[in-house]
Length: 259
Image 1 (cartoon, rainbow, N blue to C red):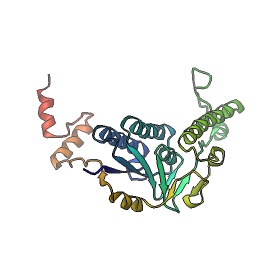
Image 2 (cartoon, rainbow, N blue to C red):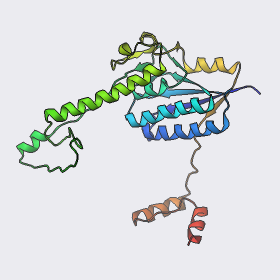
Image 3 (spheres, rainbow, N blue to C red):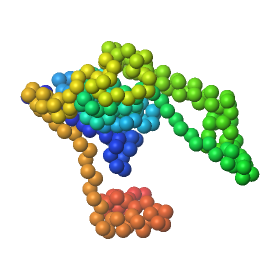
Image 4 (cartoon, rainbow, N blue to C red):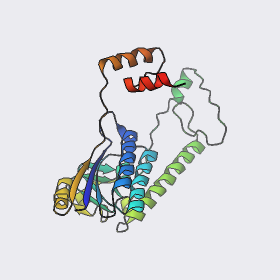
């Protein structure tokens, strides 16, 4: 038997999915491959993401590192459009990063934006009361005055997260100069600093290479069985009453039989 090349699309731009849903699906795929893949197999992870929550992408990065560590499966990240910020955080946790020449990569930085309406509330003589325990439970918020101490604390938190991001990139991209890479800039892959990507090619080119020596297997999440009209109406009626409807007749039988 030939070794297998599993292919999975991690795409946070997919409608109604977002980064959290994409990470949950990735976790299911990693669990699957941990059970069925061998050290002779490989995963091509096609990453399409401009980034998002640091906690979501930190989890995604940890999942890929776990797969490599526990199974010996080689992982190649392939970027056709964009893997920036959190998307790049995920990509660098692979053994190899390939990107189309005009794909956007990098953006190793951290950002937060908070509109502040404190002066508007003050002008309208509206008091906003906030109670906290813990000196830094809240720093900069949309409705309280942003003190110098609060702004300095928030900035220090961003710097700490950026430092952890830099450490992750430096550990997994040993050929890159982290100070050149971690400026927050994004580049098209063909103009990125050395070490940001390993090779310039599309995912299609990569997979054609793999087909010569490996069986290429596309991994996709299973589609949920569509509800019948009766099930949908039942869920709508019970949901409006604040009750939970079982998802299927089979589940209704077991729910009725439960003590």
